[in-house]
Picture 1 (cartoon, rainbow, N blue to C red):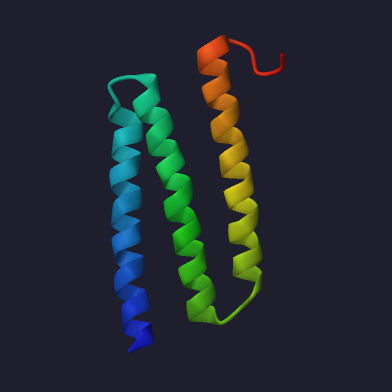
Picture 2: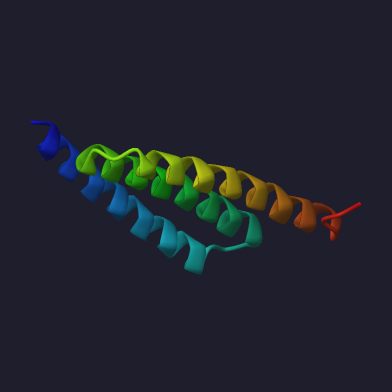
Length: 89
């Protein structure tokens, strides 16, 4: 039962990644593209966590934590650059 749920949710997360990729390429303006990229980080974290559940490995959970940290920092840096034109004050 758990295997079926992991496969179905993995397929839905891959579908949402494809839809986010479409929004990233066709976004009308830069904030929409940044939001799509941030959502792709969250979806990739969910996909990696599903792989960790499916493979029964703790390494995937550590990788998801690392991607979450990098995704947050990069989103803050890009938003700061768009608002002020400079990342470091």
